[in-house]
Amino acid sequence: MRNVEIEGHAEAVDVRIEGGRIAEIGARLTGTADVDGRGGALLPGLHDHHIHLAALAAEAASVRVGPTDVPDRTAFAAALVGGPPGEWVRAVGYHESVAGELDRWALDALAPDRPVRVQHRTGALWVWNSAALRSAGMDGDGRFWREDERLRGRVPPVRLDLEGVGRRAGALGVTGFTNADPHPASGLVPLLSVLPQRLLVMGVDDPVKLILDDPTLPTPSQLADRIREIRPRPVAVHCVTRVQLLVTLLALDEVAPADGDRIEHGSVIPAETIPWLRRLGVTVVTQPHFPAERAAAYAADVDADDRPHLYRCRSLTEADVPLAAGTDAPYGTADPWAVMRAATEREDGERLRPRAALRLFTGEARHPARTRRLAVGSEADLCLLRVPLREALRTLTGELVRATYVSGRRIGPA
Image (cartoon, rainbow, N blue to C red; front, side, top):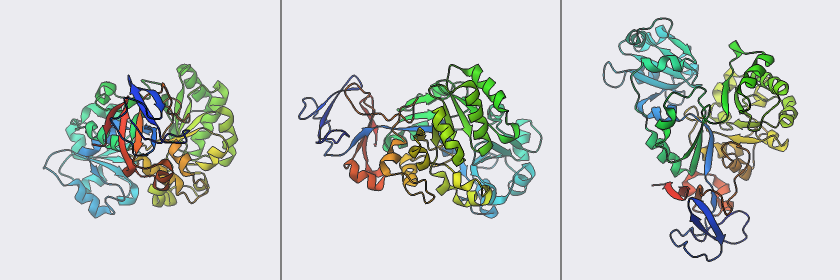
């Protein structure tokens, strides 16, 4: 690869790759004539530090019923009755602003004649209608909170378009994923092996993900005991409320943090906890696009006292709290460049500069806030842009990605 811009080099350079690693960087190198970078920036490939790959791949066989897809009850009902009669309908992205709280009877009123299952936007709740319950030999109100493992064998197989997921991510410069399911299904790792990107699967690899829910919240000591059982492995604790974060910080104080511990989401981080986070040294893996994507819902659903503390970015970086990001797709956009743009367009005092936004996705898989650098000996997981970095930072768009490489092998764009 020749004529590329690499951070830390004053002039355009050539890059020679051997055995999946960068073997040499310099001017007018031999054996680099295969790709002319035309002065475009060569970056470490992007890593999505929090994503749900199987759920994202299942979207191809699903109906989207979020507020931007079906604005009201009538449109929601129409979305549930399309397709061949009798086949199961898998609907995703639902929020109560569309048609209120759902249970089996609410769904029966909209789609009584075919099995329907609707996933809430959070991914934590499934609601089934009566036809679906009968088909699976089940009863109850049709509401299943964090019961994916129980439901997995009771529904028809869903076609997973993992090839499409990998192809689209490759076109955006993504060379790695951290799959953030709390309980990865048996066989998930072989299933995901079709992806051309590098893969870290929480629970199988480090860290181990822990889910907290307010109705079943452990005490700090109980959570500390759970973390002790997992040690010496690091943990990634799902924190989407103020109380969940406080319990987690108290537990980590009791048990002592480990290298690689993470806070997932950090949806609500009160200002007084920021020095605490810094002292513990845990990384926050956040979603700075959610305040924009979910603005209307947050305005209606989030307590006014919590709104100033949503998905902090700038205040964390200024306090030297390790920070990275994940798309949380399919529960948010799968485009990391859109997440970066959202981070630079915040109007709540949490706006990041473009370079800082880019760093949210260029960290190491196991240490997301530790930025990877292109140097001799580093893995050739690369994102080649069409323009120099300074120009790319003005727009932060995936359309600028010219080529993506994993171990020196091109994976996109097509």
